[in-house]
Amino acid sequence: MANVRRCHNLKEKKKRILDFAGKYKYLTYLGCILSGISSILVLVPFICIWKIAYEILKVLPDVTGASNLTYYGWVAVIFSLAGIFIYCAALMCTHIAAFRTARNMRSQALHHMLKLPMGYFDLNGTGKLRRIIDESSGQTETFLAHILPDLAGALVTPVAMLVMLLAFDWRMGIISLIPIVISVILMRQMMGNNMANAMKEYQNALEDMNNEAVEYVRGIPVVKTFGQTVFSFKNFYEAIIRYKRWAVNYTISLRVPMCNFTIAVNCVFALLIPAGVLLIGSTVNPEKFLSDFIFYCIFTPILTVVMNKVMFSSENLMLAKDAANRINSILEEEIQEQPADGDIKLPAGSDIEFHDVTFSYPGAERAAVEHLSFCIKEGTTVALVGPSGGGKTTVASLIPRFFDADLGEITIGGVDVKRIPIKELMNKVSFVFQNTNLFKISLFENIKFSKQNATKKQILSAATAAQCDEIFNKMPEGINTIVGSKGTYLSGGEAQRIALARAILKDSPIVLLDEATAFADPENEYKIQQAFEVLTKNKTVLIIAHRLSTVRHADQILVIENGHIKEKGNHEQLLSQEGLYYRMWEEYQTSIEWKVKEGTVNAL
Ligand SMILES: Nc1ncnc2c1ncn2[C@@H]1O[C@H](COP(=O)(O)OP(=O)(O)OP(=O)(O)O)[C@@H](O)[C@H]1O
Image (cartoon, rainbow, N blue to C red; front, side, top):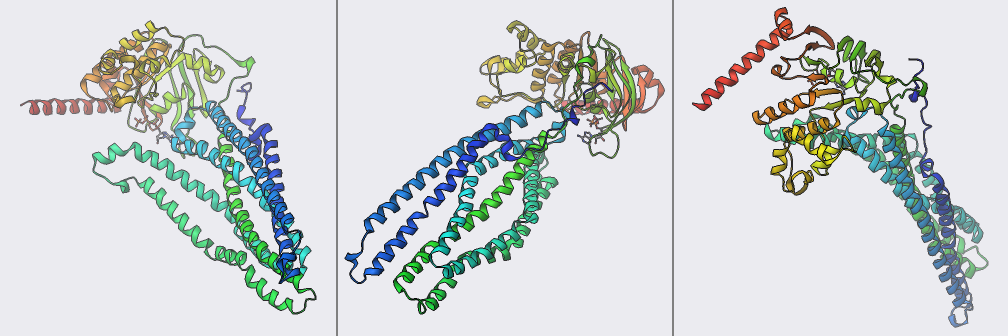
């Protein structure tokens, strides 16, 4: 449709770390500048030590003749304290900025996620999304609060040191710099593109493992039931192995360069001491040379510390960049198309029509549904049946725009769903799917969730209609019991009844139902059926049926296989066709007979 605003074309620009900081980025800059100043100030005490050593060497052996020792001592103390104080101020600035940046990252990602089509959450595991939002912002926070100011200081220090090293005795200055130059070259080799790729792989491996771990925990009941081990969760096992392989390969690949780097940054004395011994013979002022030598011996180890800092900061910088990229991967997700103001149309009625609809899941090789056309007249019930994987859930998901059709058009009340504002569409449609999500709030609030302005009376009567009263009677605080508190958990069937109460309260004219198969205990099943009846009365209903008994009375049954409608008609018409539905019905009858016989045998 030409007039529909293509929001996904207006992609946000890729954001860098500090773009998330907003005006707080200036605080980050200030923090870095202060950290740089502090790292220069803390070098002054070394000059004082050199001065003290020189004064003492000049008057040896009568040390009492040395002048200005107290003065240099105080200067050293004052500059040390000033350095520490300014460093604390720097950390305060960077911490405030880091907290705000991490908060902005989280809130921007979460706000964007709210605008994404619901199908996005099906396609991206909760483990992955949680990790991206939580850990990426956490990593950025640590980087901005601690690593970045330290890195700023660590980069300023070598420049100041270079000046000082060359100022005292240029020959020893150059000798002290040799290991540093070598370590910088080695560091560049380690930190090149390979490192950036390695960090990306590392994050991917962690993300996979996290996702699969969530799936594993969810599937533990199944694992236990069938007496299996973690190895039965092939994907989880493979994710762990992938991570292990990555970690081992990475460690091995860094063994040699890391050893060389460590040797290089620590070998300064191996050069300095022989050089000192050689040079002392040719010097005209041995006291000055000795005090210079002492200065270099005290001063150069700081270089080792600085280089190590730079090295680990660079690694953290890559992690933080990768974290920003991951948040960007959410921000760059196409938000759901919204109709342009002039293009908005409200549906007249609740007929649902599929016009030659085709849809493929992202990355899938074949279409989940193809060239589907059918109509659900207002106030009627259409049931979808068919083999698993046929496309029933996909059909239902396309109506409330969990996904948008690739081809064709879906209309409600004669209006393309893409032209109906999302809020209006959501008001029009209720859905109860198998995996009911209850929040950790009271049962009352859980039901109220579907209609925030509902009165207490409306909520209670929806709960009664959905057969929930008996659930409340069992709970310590009745309808006010918090889900999940004090060991109060609901069975799958009970949770679905709460979800049905939500839908009854919402009272929207279109109802999409995915009939549960998992909660098949007869009492629950009976109660759920009763709740279904209240919910679907005088509504336009699409029901995904797993038990054929439920669909017998549907106005129309669509038999879906491989994404196509294979048969359509009511129960009697489909039986008379003696096709797929007929065979499914036969199988269903046989299974019931088996159950009855089993029950009789058990009863005997
Ligand atoms: N998130 C997804 N990503 C990729 N492919 C998917 C996704 N969900 C479903 N499919 C594929 O789309 C096709 C239709 O799946 P769908 O879940 O709609 O079938 P169904 O008839 O509802 O199955 P069931 O009765 O088992 O729930 C299947 O081939 C399935 O593998």
